[in-house]
Amino acid sequence: MTTTTTRFLIVGGGLEGLAIAWSLADQGETDVMVVERDTLCSGMTGKSSGVVRCHYGNPSLVAMSWYGVDIFTRATELFGDDMAFQQCGYVVGVGENNIAPLEANVAMMQEIGVDVSLIGHDTMAELWPGLHLDDFAAFAYEPLGGRGEAYMAGMAFAAAARRLGVTIKQSTPVAELLQGEDGRVIGARLASGDEIHADTVIVAAGPWTPALTAGVDVDVDVQAQRAQLILVDQGAPTPVVPVLSDLAGLSYICREPNGELLVGNSDHSAPQYIDPDNYINRADESTVDKVVMKLGHRLPDMPDPRITSSYVGAYDVTPDYNPIIGPSPVDGLFLATGFSGHGFKISPAVGKLVADMVLTGTTTLKHVDPQDFRYSRFAEGDLLTSLHPYEGAGEMR
Ligand SMILES: Cc1cc2nc3c(=O)[nH]c(=O)nc-3n(C[C@H](O)[C@H](O)[C@H](O)COP(=O)(O)OP(=O)(O)OC[C@H]3O[C@@H](n4cnc5c(N)ncnc54)[C@H](O)[C@@H]3O)c2cc1C
Image (cartoon, rainbow, N blue to C red; front, top):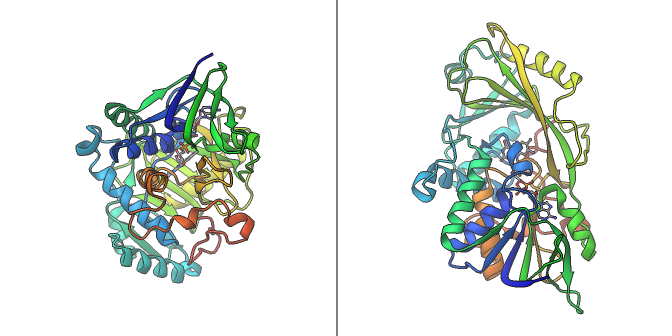
C-alpha cells in the first residue's frame, strides 16, 4: 500500500473533470491528479450529442455557453485539436404558446453579448430546405452554435493538462473518500488499497457521484435519467444544416458528419431512471415509433428513410435540471456534477469556474454567479429555474 499526496485530487476523468484539470493547470496550478476508474471519457461523455447553443433562460448558463463557443471556436489554436466543432448554427423553433419566452430569452442573451436573432419562416426555410414549418410560430438563430464531439474535447483537455504537468491515472477506481478526525475530506482510498491524500477533493463523477459522496454523508440529489438517441438515414445525405431544437415537437435534430440525422428527445415529462452500470443500450420500440412519427412530420419529403441505429445514455439530473458546482457541506470536498444533459457546451466554463473557485473562492467569468449552482439550493427550496420558461419544455433551462 502506498500513499501519495497532491493539492487537488479530481475523481472522474470525464469531460468535466478533465476541463477542470486543464483550467487549473492553465492558471498555473499543476499539483493536480485525476483518477478515472476506467479509461478517459468512457462514462457519459462518450454518449453526448455535443450540441452547442447559448439558448438558456438563466444568465449564468447563457454566459457559460458563450464562453464555451469562444473556446470551441479557438480549439485548434488553444489545444492543437479542433474538438470536431462544426459551426453549422443552431435554431430553436417554438409554437404560438412560447413566443413570449422566446423573445424574452433572446433579449436576455443579446444583453449578455450572444450573437442571436429572431428569424422568420423564410430565413428558416433557406437554412433548412424541406423542413415542415407550419406549426412553428417563431425561431431564434445562433449562427455560431453547432456541434462538437465531447469525447474529443475531453481528450484535448486531458492532453493539454498533461503537457502542463497534471497527473492522470486511468484504471484507478476510487473505493471511498477519506475523512480526517474533524470530518474534513482528506483524500481517497483506491480499490487497490492505495491512498491519495489531497488538500481538496473535487468529485466530477457524473451519475456515479452520489455513490461516492454517500460514504461521507453528503447526499447529492442526482439520478441517472435514460436518454434514447436514434440515428436516421434519410435516403440521401443531409446537407449541412443547423442543429434544430424543436420545441413544438419536443425533440432535437442534428446532422451527423456522415449526413445521417441524430434525433433526441426534449420531452422530460415522464423521466425513466436507470442504473448507469447496467442498462439496455438501444432505444425501445415506443421511442422509435415516436421518432418515426415526429421526424416524418418535420421532414415529410425524406427520399428513403430508415433507422440505422440507436443507443442510450444517462443524464445525471438534479431536481432543477441544473448542475451542482461548488463546495459540499463537508470541508475539503468540492462538487461538479448533475449536468443534466447540458454539460458539453458549458464544459470550458465549468473548468474555469471550478478552478477559479477552488483557487480564489470566486470567479472572473463575466455574467456568471457561482451561487446559482450551490449545493444548498435544493434544501433551501430555491431552485435554479429559467426566468422565461417554455410551456411543455420547462427543463430547457
Ligand atoms: C445522451 C447524452 C446526450 C447529451 N447531449 C448533450 C448536448 O447535446 N449538449 C451538451 O451540452 N451536453 C450534452 N450532454 C451532457 C454532457 O455530455 C455531459 O454533461 C458531460 O459529458 C458529462 O461529463 P462528466 O465528466 O460530468 O461525466 P462522465 O463523462 O460520466 O464522467 C464521469 C467519470 O467518472 C468516472 N467515475 C465514476 N466513478 C468513479 C470512481 N469511483 N472512481 C474513479 N472514477 C469514477 C466514470 O468512469 C466517468 O468516466 C449529453 C449527455 C448525454 C448522456
